[in-house]
Amino acid sequence: MPERAPRADDASRTTGRAMPEQDALPFPYRGAIECRGALVTALRSVVDPEVALSIVDMGLVYGVAIDAETAVVELTMTTSACPVAHVIVEDVQAALDRVLPEHLAIDVKLVWDPPWTPERMSDGARAFLRR
Amino acid sequence: MMVASLARGRSRRQLAMPATIVMRAVFAALVALSLVAAIVGGLWRTGMHLPDAAVVARSAGQHAALMLSVLLGTTISLERAVALGRRWAYAAPVLAAVSGLLIVCGLRPEAAALGVVAAVVFVAVNVFLLHRAQDSATAMMVLGALCWLAGNALEALEPGQPAVIAWWFAFPVLTITAERLELTRFLPRRSSAGTLLRTIAAGIVAAAATSVIDPAMGGVAFGAALVLLALWLAAFDIARRTVFAGGVARFMAAALLTGYLWLAVGGLAWLGTALGCPGRDVALHALGLGFIFSMVIGHAPVIVPALAGVRLRFGAWFYAPLLLLHASLACRLFGAIANPEWRTLGAQVNAAAIGLFVATVAGSALAWRRRDVRRDRGRAHAPRARPT
Image (tube, rainbow over the protein chains, first blue to last red):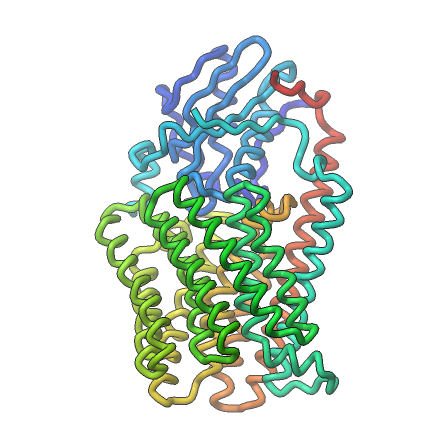
């Protein structure tokens, strides 16, 4: 069965706003180049519905490292007192599960250091919020 | 580096043990009992013919306690317990839910005492969260928790003291305000907007405190602060932008923006009733249903998965309870001016809107689960290995 595109009706990620894909990723990426495009698209499909922006545009992805066995994603939240953090983590895992090679284990880590700041948001995100 | 990790392939639902399932079922039953009692009591107060039973009269007399202290206290303290992630933090929602059972059973003093203990635990939870997050939004949540404690303590010491309602309303209002304050970090001009919002929040607390010693002055100040809060939200809140997005974000924003309208109406009515004008029903229910419950409905698609570990499939059907709530509230609060019977009718449809909301959440959970099963069946590969 072919890989499925992220669906639009999951309550936690229906609001994905298409931000132009950048050549330079807003987070460090270490891994096979052929995984990169699908991985970024999958991460962009995970949205914080309170601000209607993807976790990539919010600057919540701190980094991705893929080796022969595991894909590790380091993720933060805008506040460490966020009750929906584990839901977003599960969304990221589900999104990556659809696009990454099946032999890879997926490990999504919540990272609080350094703390998130608004400066991490993309220009597109800033423009949306300034409208 | 502080790190938490979740391995793919085993959901929280799959990890639940039988004892956990039983405890969750008992907890849900307690919440459902308080909700039903609060609604039945509320309908009785609006003149609906109901069986002449002591439990109905008790629920009517304790309608505000059930709705504000028990149900909102349970929900909000559960949300913060999930955020903290410590087992002891769940004592607050459990104790609040049990206090609802005690109220229904006619044990009001015991319920009030339990409410105080629940609020003390909740304050501690928020202090721990403040220690972790160290921002002004979390500090405002501590203030909201203290308002719940003040209301519960006043109810325990002096049952029926009119200012208890102001404290109980200040609790969810400040909690919501704190969440909106947190979101101002994303906005330009955030420093001045944030300072203004913090000032309004301080005004709400000061007004609730004044209501204890001078109900008229406190009521005017409380209503005025609510109107100012509505104006701030209409001017600065991020929902003004996200309403132009799609899906859940738009739904949340629609629920928020309509709620802000009712917040202004409720504030004006609160101010008016403090000056001797009629309109107590408008003051209480524009605020309780129009603002706070609209917020609850709006956040349900996001917060229910976090609190209950149950995923929801979002769809346009979520708008049905929201529209029904606001339409029936307008019928109840404004239609009653022309025809008093509209108040009863509007209240009944308010109750139906809450029932429809519960059914919508349940149906969405089933819809997600059905799709999840289909997805697992169609999976191209076996579950992945867990990371080592």
